[in-house]
Image (cartoon, rainbow, N blue to C red; front, side, top):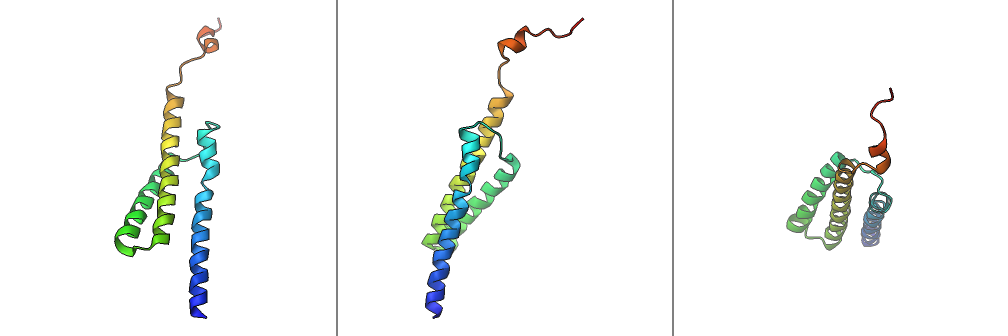
Length: 109
């Protein structure tokens, strides 16, 4: 009975971890396809740092393949969102003016 519970818990943990990683997909689509700045860079910086620490913990301390796999997926997703967010923010800051903006008078007299 206890072994069945532990096996079920292992499967549930793997499914929950995979579901959490899939939950990053809408943010990745917003950043990459729609060019919509929908991710807070400071938040994803902290989450990426914690994902790095979790990944190293999974390799060096736990040595559990399932936990390592979920940690890697989480790290990749957080890092990708952080990278895309920083890239999009930099592109929006350096955006050259359009012709309409260049031809617009500075002041109406």
